[in-house]
Amino acid sequence: MIDKRKEYSERWKNKIGIEEYRRRARVSAQQWRDNNKEKSRQIKRKSDEKNKIKIRERRRIWARELKIDVLRHYSNGTLTCVFCGEDRLACLSIDHIDGNGCKDRKESNKNGTRMYQWLKTNNYPEGYQTLCMNCQFIKREGNKEFRYAID
Image (cartoon, rainbow, N blue to C red):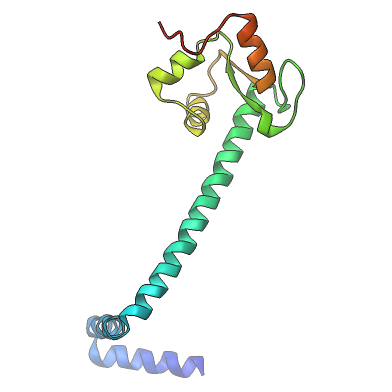
């Protein structure tokens, strides 16, 4: 059955020419869309929604893998807090060793995934470490680092 269709299709293309064949196919597809506008819209809407979901999901997976790579690098390959050993990914984040993180983020607009991407793109520069949020707050209090002092 498939061979007959292919054979017929080839004969038809050769008879009328490839460009004419393509033109007729475009015209017939456009005629179908014109005659079935609502159905065509529904099909496009469903397709767009599926693609959005797929794109969002791929982006989430990419961002999570990026975060894991960066945190693992700054915790010497273990994916744990360098102070207390916390290993839950939701608790871990990047810390500026010198304590100038707020100023750095304000000046360069590096937050979240942008920060991880910047670190990876710049070959993991020195001055960062992996800490859990508790250790970051303890460090901030101990060093008298305040988020609002940007001077």
